[in-house]
Length: 252
Length: 314
Image 1 (cartoon, chains in turn red, cyan):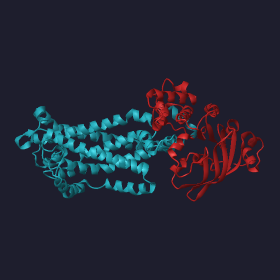
Image 2 (tube, rainbow over the protein chains, first blue to last red; image 1 turned 90 degrees about the vertical axis):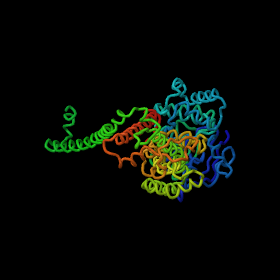
Image 3 (tube, rainbow over the protein chains, first blue to last red; image 1 turned 60 degrees about the vertical axis):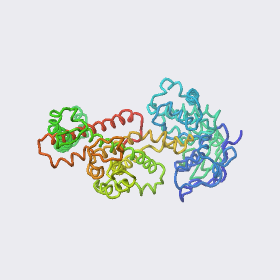
Image 4 (spheres, chains in turn orange, yellow; image 1 turned 180 degrees about the vertical axis):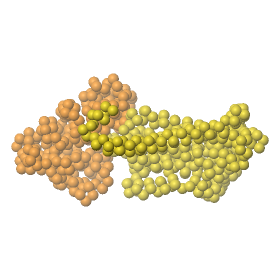
């Protein structure tokens, strides 16, 4: 399997505070990579660096390289808008827009200009909702407000909205932390199916989730990547004492 | 008092309890009286307006009352020129203030760096406190000559009034619209940007619709300020009760608004005369207009806005 994203000597600063220190890791294509670690360890910050969402926060600075298909996304000539179409993001709290279900999914294709005709747009919306395993629940009420859906459905709607622009990578920032266990499992099933087409990076504070749903796991501690390995090896035979302490619940 | 019985275990001893109850009841009554009195006062104002203004509606045929000639000395009480004057000045003011106000709010709320916003916002809010008469002065001394130089027969025109009114309602519009934008959760912007929307697309397609209820309120309050304003408008619109026609330059001729008419003529009418009650009738018409604007605003913000949006409400 090839590397979709390669991170090299990456540092990140909020003003004077260094949030990420000398990161090096490879993210495999069509796999699920989980990032775990205690609150404030930098895992979410790192995730937001992968599609440059941190650009929206003032006073931040990145050093080093993040190569996406071999090209550094922090190079001066990179079009951030185009980058985010290729590397989409799903957030911690479901954030559907206060619009109809249809308009939410159609938002991306519309701003990108993907569909010339309305039946093309209908097709993309249906396909995306099917992809996010939401179609059967909403196909009869596409014009209803998205905020009337339950949180689990809202999160899957946000996933549908993200895949509607046909990205290559989907970043998920604790996508299940606001969901109940049943909704969590359905999102995890969905991730598994999505990983056939997409490369997925997920931040989670839930170690069981990382263990059961991911192929690779990175453990962050105080802005550093302590250990990165195939999920099975990391959880069954951690190389670093700190990793072992954390996953067995003695540190964290 | 089934509820009280259930809570017996946790409630204070009986004598203390009755004290608490009395205190609660007094505070409740005071608040209730405050609420009721404001409603009663508004009702009384309306009744007073009706009592003083109704004779005009009864004694003057409606066709004449809304006729084209306002000439009280000859007992000609046609409100149309005044309605037209108010309408032209207000619509003009809104047409100027709306785009300026909303774009400024968008700049402040979405684009300007926070440091600049922290400086500009208070300044704009201070502008809202400038007494309208001072702006009237400004219009009279500075603006009117400028407009006359542009080729109008006089500098005191509907346009001058609109400019002054626009300037007067801008701080209100900007400040409230910016608050509405600020109340839109950051998650919406992030959500839009993360799919590859540009900043402008995120603002136009997500933030503005989400903030719509608040934006409507901002605009309506701005209009409210404009249509009710009297003194400054009286100073700069030239006070001619004519219906502006297209031949005479429409926007660039002197007009007289309803409010200005009441203010200018109230001092010199005999109480109880037909002229007197006609002035009150103008007041009734104004009341009805602003009531209509308010309920329209309510309708626009209404159920739809509450149901569909989490953000943007004030």
